[in-house]
Amino acid sequence: MNGGVSEATWARYFDGDVVSLYVSPRHLRAHYTYIVDALQPLLPSNRSFTLLDFGCGEALATPRLAETAARLLLYDGSPVIRDRVHSRFGGLAGISVLDDDDYAALPDGSVDLVLVISVIQYVNDHDLKRMLADWRRLLAPDGALILGDVLPPGNTTFADISSLLRFALKNGFLWAALRGLATTAATDYPKLRRTLGLRSYDEAEMLARLRDAGFTASVAPRNVSPSPHRRTFIATPR
Ligand SMILES: C[S@@+](CC[C@H](N)C(=O)[O-])C[C@H]1O[C@@H](n2cnc3c(N)ncnc32)[C@H](O)[C@@H]1O
Image 1 (cartoon, rainbow, N blue to C red):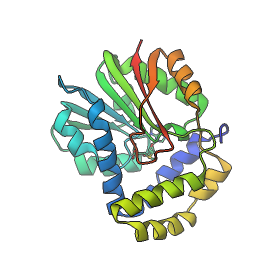
Image 2 (cartoon, protein in one colour):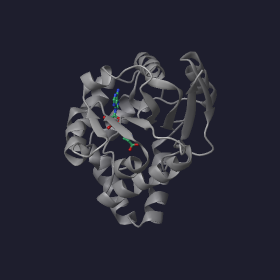
Image 3 (cartoon, protein in one colour):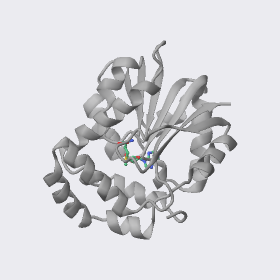
Image 4 (cartoon, rainbow, N blue to C red):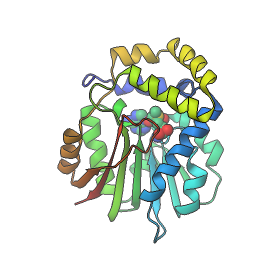
């Protein structure tokens, strides 16, 4: 559903027990392994690079991304998640967990790759415009934005549940997924999804928004996150 998404309320949700969206530690690990595998062909292979993971969530892809990135900047809008990510990875060489001020102070052109996966469905129109402008400003001229897990119009809870169950079956956590779905049903998530909705974009609309923000963009052959019905866009500064 498009429109009316209150970022503040979704933000409060992410400050709570978002881990319930991931049904078990095994799910979390499989989720991030899938993402980091799917990202490999999109990472620069011929030079050292700085990667900004915006809306990084639990950020379990960090150790593998750190093998190729010279510098990894992790930023999430939720202070609770940031603290968790900081205690997990904050002390490691080449990895910085940014707070709001650190993020705002990043110099123009200082990032080679901006990764934004499964974030913009929670963001209203005005903020998406501001974010696209920020990412365009932060990117080096030969950099790229990877906007992953973008919901298509008509993305239903049913499609997300089927995709989760298929992923769970393949990765050996089907029972945990069934239990997790029951747990999630008892949280605020279904209600928020019903009342606030999640923003969705068809391909033409998202390509137009990226163009308006100063990018040349295309749709990737497959989504970088384990929900094949969602889309990934790759955008480079024009
Ligand atoms: C579904 S999680 C995705 C996490 C990770 N990128 C992944 O793909 O697994 C969404 C994350 O986006 C963050 N987020 C949502 N809105 C945001 C905003 N406006 N600014 C920064 N982070 C935001 C949330 O706090 C949450 O950690």
